[in-house]
Length: 296
Picture 1 (spheres, rainbow, N blue to C red):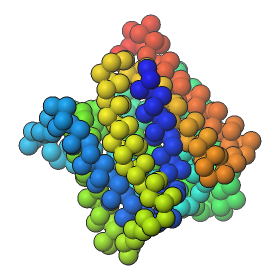
Picture 2 (picture 1 turned 90 degrees about the horizontal axis):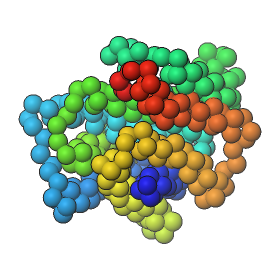
Picture 3 (picture 1 turned 120 degrees about the horizontal axis):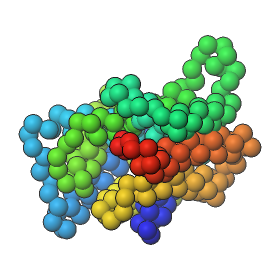
């Protein structure tokens, strides 16, 4: 169980770490460098412990699509969201991703939205509305603020990639697949850096350098390694606890490291989204078992 807490801690504190790293990196370059080095470290770990990196030729396009959505789309949107809004708010809004996955699974694969999932979606929608409070005037005027676009884009991209990967089925060792998807995300970010920015990478500031090392070594390589070890040892519903803990650590880390102070509305929105995701992720398994449903 310690792996749940450590991986969630590493991923949660990665939010303020990325914010600090952006002081020395341009956004596309940060993602290209971070994801590329993370992929290399994961590949090295996989080889050391005897895991395979092989993916059958007929599934490589599916792997690319999964990497494009789950890694490239998610990480690129997140980094721009952090430039447009408070880190804690971005983390909480992105945390709606499991609820978007439920919607996509219902729309594209016919998975039923039962009463428990419906309650989860209602809680998530109410929480999302509260967290969007700073953007209410712009929304009332018919415009969609860039920060909101980025953070919802991150959540939706991750959800779409998760649903696609689950229903497509990509054979291979999970650690190896993660390494390949990080590499795909890095390549796409590198293309973005070449097309849309003057690349900047300045690690002369020890804070920026430390944040970048943390991002690559702990949040990308080690956290993924621990996560896949965890999935081999406990049921997926238990592992979902890690998903619930990530934004908690992100908010705490943003308050301590970045000095951010969420408002009462932020906490209310956080609570509603946490309840929604908790219903969807943790309570659905026993509910489905009692009702004779298969878990999605």
